[in-house]
Image (cartoon, rainbow, N blue to C red; front, side, top):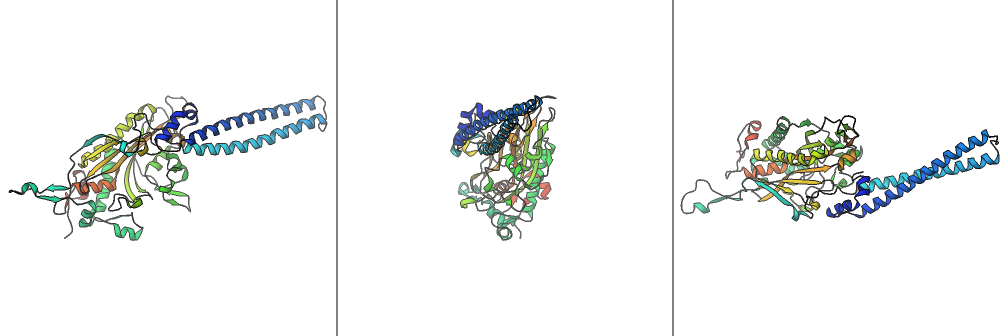
Length: 446
């Protein structure tokens, strides 16, 4: 269950509007309410039948104790009534099981309502919260030019795939030969750049931001995928190892959040904050021919994920803090970016509130998403039964879960190649990565 039966009963209009705002099927709300009502009727009848059977059993004992023959008509009639009650109880148990399964499925398919301050609408309704850095143009003035034509002398920034080809740092064709399109191979300085970025992100998160590092499995079972909301909402986007009924992770969010499935945090344990690197696998990447050039949409990519378990009254503030941690990485890399508050139909099925961070790629003059930071409130925690005690001995309550990219690599790499390129085809290395790469500039091979 995700939205919770109690909330569904108390706030059906809020849940229904939440589904409509996200463009989802609101009739599931009415179906779930009907199933819940049917379930309560069946449970009531089952309880009544069980009480009836208990009464009859007591009457049988009393009759025999009073002298009635065990095989006589009085006791036989009572035994027949007990058998009839038992048969009805068995039938009710089957029906209750069927209704329970249908109700659980309906609840899993009802989206998490968005927070009240989230704009309602599609991508056109997203709100730019803030922008940082200089938005470099594709046509750049040539440094050092003098004379009457100096103001018009320019050089053209190239898209990242052209820069990468000159530097020979990743190979899309050979990746396609090995696994198919959308599986890039990084080589030389390209592989080093991947490793340097992962190390930089993790080091900052662990040493400065207080995260605990996790190195999770790259596959999860169905219960884990269901817990974070990948199924039944996103099954078609995941790679499945059908023989073993395992899913390749689309993000480290899935295994890391499931670390505490069916667990209770004690009062002094929250917040719990993890940072995890993982390869990520997504089947839908590059669909319909969109962004198929370069590494903007690929089937396998690397990402460092932030996962937070918070007390309910602290999750809103924690979301803003997490966004700030992702922004800090982009500032240190010197990449211009903007923060968007996502509208209801552009934020996802399970999020209550979501920010996207997009970097500016001057070679293609476009914004590229490099991080999504989301608050799920208690939606995921209910699926996974992750709870906490507000005080020692207190009744367990659901925690709030959050996660965010900190950061996703492919588009960060694209933005670096397009931001730091020079007219001669070389690329300056951002300061935080120079020690790991052992150089301050990447040059085309001779």
